[in-house]
Image (cartoon, rainbow, N blue to C red; front, side, top):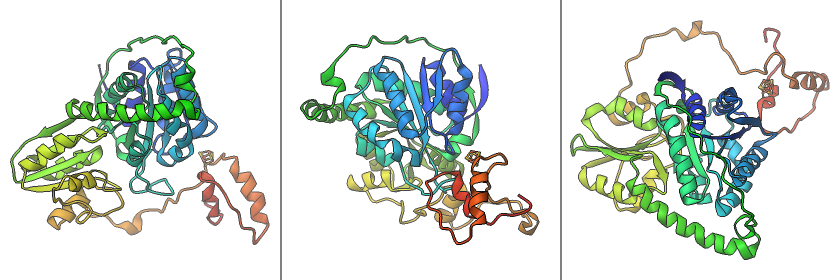
Length: 379
Ligand code: SF4
């Protein structure tokens, strides 16, 4: 059965098909629709908003410990809030498989920063997958849950705005019922007091060594050879962008399992091509690895360090010319600055505060930062 799904919808579908029983999230663009769609599978999946990302992460961890496959989702900055339980859960590991979705925002369309959460995988020492399409967003949830259970670890599932919100045709399947694993009391595994956490620390390193073997063999990392002149290494949506620009004129190393990176596959690929481009948004996460392996490449010395790596940006950087676009008259476009929703409960608070002049307000992250704008009659 084929469906037209956004990446977020596909993640929800993938979780349902893979037998997930518990889902939690804290809303934030571009991740919000994941839980909204998981909630549609009422009866099969318990889907709950957390009061914040840490609570969402902890309830999903609880479900995993209890033996259910679980998923939790948040935007990139939300993972900062949830980092504390994630880092410890990386040590204690899972019972039922657990996937942690981070929806990153290159370009900061709806975010206060552009942090690259691929670094969290390395920092927390948990495996990471990066889908490029809606189909992969669905399929990789199942793979991530299998990796989670096979290697006793939560798995980071890194998406970006264009993967979350773009629609693509997805071949869907049926739900597999994996059941709930029995909970066995095991304080050595689940209580990370120093006496237990010290051996856990060693097991995490041993696990990473095993994952280094896995990442070399998984079909999520593959090469497409179209010649020796140009080789492009990319993950996520950048792979699709690169293909749009270079087509069959370049070879590709497409990375879908990106922590640990497949060092052997990268070396093999780089040795086969004359000119290497590493196309990635945000940090030089892959580029640093390529350079550490002794290969020169075009990366952040050619492409912008910030913003989205759209086909237009890539074409300008490599070929010095933009994509052909339709001419528009920008003066006729009505400005649509972001604003609080019509019924937002923060409005009343800010209305009252606004009556008192010269008041400086220190706030948390979130929609209510929009209160800094002048009130306007037409909004
Ligand atoms: S603007 Fe207010 S009502 Fe709208 S999403 Fe943000 S907090 Fe909720």
